[in-house]
Amino acid sequence: KKGTTVALLPKANPESQPATKAAIWIHKVIEPCYSLVMTHIFSLLHLCVCVCPINGQCVRSQHGCVVRVCSLCALLLWKHSQYCFSVQKSGGTQLKLVMSFPNYGQAMFKPMKQERDEETNSDLYYFSDFERHNAEIAAFHLDRVLGYRRIPPVVGRLVDVVKEIKDVTTDRKLARTFFTSPVGNVCFYGQCSYYCSTEHAVCGRPRDLEASLAVMLPDLSLAVRRSWRSPWRRSYSRSKLAKWESEPDYCSTVTKTPPFNKGTRLVDFIDLVILDFLMSNMDRHHYETFEKFGNNTFLVHLDNGRAFGRHSKDEPSILAPLEQCCRIRRTTWLRLRLLSLPQYRLSDVMRASLSHDPLHSVAPLLSEPHLAALDRRLKTVLETVSRCQKRQSEDGGDDGVLYDDIA
Ligand SMILES: Nc1ncnc2c1ncn2[C@@H]1O[C@H](COP(=O)(O)OP(=O)(O)OP(=O)(O)O)[C@@H](O)[C@H]1O
Ligand SMILES: [Mn+2]
Image (cartoon, rainbow, N blue to C red):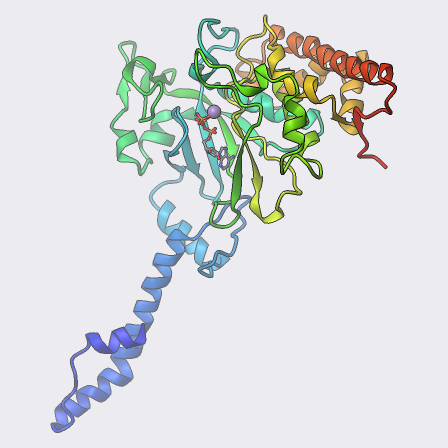
């Protein structure tokens, strides 16, 4: 930086006295000041790209981002607004925003698109289903109740779409999609590949909009995540069957293939399958892990917006991995059995847990039929495990169903 500074300043003429004086002056006064100014400009630029992820904690980035610097950055960015600013989240198929808060926190925002008691049209394929804000919230609670804790915290909020989005967004494309509906509600639709049009706009009442806010994981530049394709991924086609739907011995092929041939990957995946079956999420095409921990690590259960779409119907195919592999963690199995007892009934525990969410005061996050479906599906999971155990004991084998993670 110093070199650049010198090059930018006029060269002094050593023969002329005034020029020498000027050179000295430049050398002693201007240059250090200039360098200082430049250094500050550089650090300002740096600090504005530094990442301050969660809990107001500034994480040191490769560029040497420190707390002091980040506070300054925050000050610059939020000086004009006591609220947060939001931009559209790139990637994914439906509208979602990333909101930034004055305490450096960031959250992924998904708006309410469906009433709680509305059931997804059964003629709609899972891949064109809406994402539901209450599904994101309920999934977080369910994941916790099951003892997994693999979904980043999600909370419900009533958001003022004008004050907290339109007025403070730095995303011009998003701002351009705001309009007032014929009955005076403020609506917007953003830009995305599904449901981002005037016909599918999300609207406040007149400005208040229910939404889910999920804590953003640290930026990928700080904590790289790997996305893995699910071996039991659906075909995402209206006519084609996936391999797992037609190959009878599909599980043994999977368990011979890395990373499913070692460690806890299979039982981790089965945990996720059970979560998905309970909330009827058919859209688990991928799952993620933190790269740093290699293959021997937990799974991050992101993207649960298409869960809790239908309560009157269960989807047995979601349980195919459990059915085909007959393997489950002992701790998961014990937890499921506990949650089937009358005093710890899953629906009751979930109702109690969800009542702590701020949106509960607007309406319960899951309607009663959805809570009842949880109990019914839990019974199916336990019956599936029992069937596996019965089959194995008839075959004369040891109990290979339970993966012992207690000893
Ligand atoms: N809490 C989070 N923190 C950081 N990144 C996240 C978080 N939740 C989701 N993501 C990332 O954001 C991307 C899009 O989010 P999400 O999967 O919810 O959108 P989507 O529209 O459902 O995607 P798709 O339609 O492809 O299923 C995902 O690739 C995921 O890696
Ligand atoms: Mn999705």
